[in-house]
Length: 212
Figure 1 (cartoon, rainbow, N blue to C red):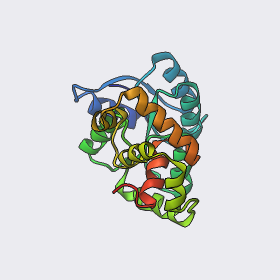
Figure 2: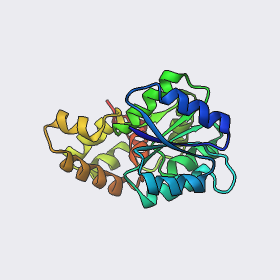
Figure 3: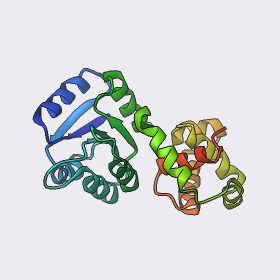
């Protein structure tokens, strides 16, 4: 897995690079000290994942996440930050982040989140997951019946598995379908439910009890 680290603190960048390079499955291909540099390096080196801080000079992590996802949607962004404030969290999700991790996480949690993100899973730090679920509960858009009526039976099957954190490959194997077919179903789910990514779709499914 090719990883780009973006953080405005040199000690953090160096520490993360040293930590991640201890894992034989991970290769740090570059580091950036602000969002603008991260966008440039992401376009140049095409990493699998950008490990993104949020509060930075020149261009913050929210803006950089949005720019990277718009220009290179195949690149995933995993937020790693000290900030658990609601506005940062939800702005990051809306910008297209695949996960949200706090910097006080253990080393194995960071590497596991990276590997899960690479496989297409979503990750929310347990310390912020409750906020996401509460926000989506407070701002319900659909009833369970409305969701089920919008989606086909197969799309509902796919959504339930997305909510359980399975990647497209895992879902394809479980449902005995091709990865291309699963990608089409996931895209249709996003369109019908008016969500931008797997995290938002999973949250909506969990909120309405469709992850069971």
